[in-house]
Length: 385
Image (cartoon, rainbow, N blue to C red):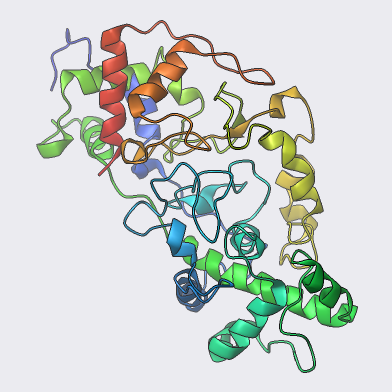
């Protein structure tokens, strides 16, 4: 073990904090009472097929896996997602996503299945419409769908394309569909999301050098192999859980509190009016697929996050969800629209704590030496495999 006089050695309290950040402390996967098939292997297998099928787009070229790349932590390396068009924000990694209460950078959806169907109707992402997707399932996946969810709705006599969020023609076609048939289509559409969510729940983070290092220390053993930290990496860990305050937001085994913070991130020049959480609250409340909606399998008692969320206030202005730092060194560029290009620049941002473009940044400048800066960067690089 490191000598007692070594300033990089963790004390008992620091070790406890470090252990709380490891995968060994990850609790069991939370249930999702709003999705009755969340834990069904058949549903997860069906969802995996849907996730990687480019037919789930209006041009037959874009799948969920187009942006959530399996070899890139289920994200991509772009400042903003590229599908049929270019989105406003970065693609978020999916490992551990089922532990989040809120989805997307702004939390505009309150379940994984409600999130999964949102890009399907976005003209910049999959570009389709509700009836298009239900027809697609009937044509390509009927047996698998009905084996899990029961009969698909009868689409006889309905147009090829219709949906409440599509083109003017698609919206008009949707309004012409009787309410009962609309409800049946919505139910099938929600079930597409529930299957994809069942698959996404199986995506968990991989063990890292950091996990192996701290697990050895907690067991009273000397780290071995790649679990051995350099003095700089150990100093960075102490800063992370100590005076740098990173653990205040990047806590728990997923290294995120899952909440929303204004950290003074520069405005995205392509979308300067992005207000983050402040612009998302109305969306999640009005979403027919939210926890309290008719397509949720849960009860009102399961919807406390939605019922008691903060609905307004300056703290929501330009507040974005804390991303997980697992694998962070391989995920440049950084922030919700790739405004910060390198890991070094990201640390400098927190070191300098610039004013927010609007609202109030929660950051305060860090009293960080050049050695401390280098140590934090070195430690962050241990958060990958």
